[in-house]
Image 1: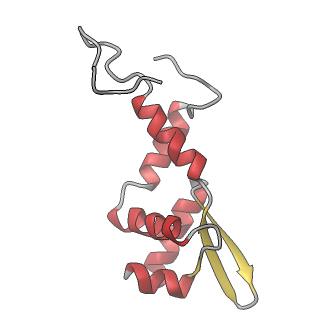
Image 2 (image 1 turned 90 degrees about the horizontal axis):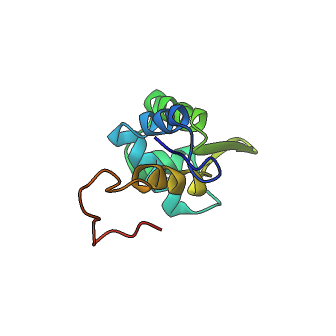
Image 3 (image 1 turned 90 degrees about the vertical axis):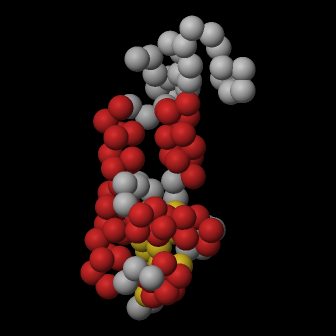
Length: 114
C-alpha cells in the first residue's frame, strides 16, 4: 500500500483515529465541537447538546484528546473543549479515498482521484 507521508497518516495513526471515532457518542461529541467552531464549548454545554454527561463524557473526551482530535483548556473554573483536528479528519478521509478503485478493472468515473 503506497502512502503519501505529507498528507496521509501512517496506518497505525489512522487506525487509532478511526478507533477514537468508533462510537456513536464520541462521533456526536466531535461533530458537536466541529459545529461549535474554534471557540469550542464548556463541558457543561457540550453535555447539554449531546446528551452525554458526567464520567461518560469525560471518558469520551479523553479518547478524542488522545487521538489529537479534541483539545481541552482551562478558562477560569470551566474546561473548554474544541475540535482541533480539521486537517486530521480531512487526512483520514484522504487515507480512505486516495487509492479508490486502484485495483479495479476499470477506473471509477464518478470519483475524483485528485
